[in-house]
Length: 138
Image (cartoon, rainbow, N blue to C red; front, side, top):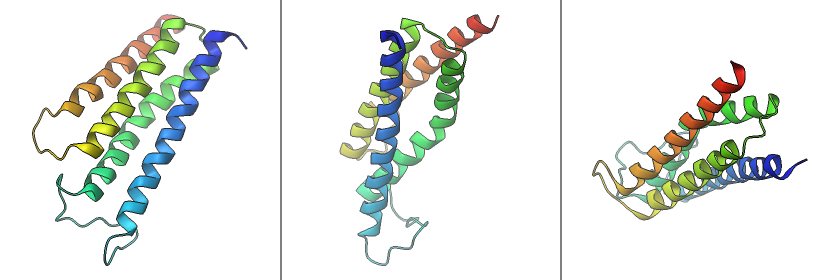
């Protein structure tokens, strides 16, 4: 395995670890609440609640995971060896990690919030990866 492939695989692996951590934080913070019901979150919660923010962080990552995971797995299947693609995986990972940290730390209803910029960085990285795949498939 060459260095470009390894760095892409490593970033993708760390993304999956981040997803597991987000699941754990969301699950355990909610389960510690009085009268917690599995699979349900109190509809009265908002950004001032860490339980809400942890839940939304995980849900937001899940909402964006299909496109990212599909893009990366297709690239791995096609044996894309682009350093730019690997850098984009890292950018996406770091943007999602910062998004997560900001969502956990900042209770705001403002839009855009600081986390919005990192969400958009992740989207941009995914768009570039899709472009690289398009070029590969042409």
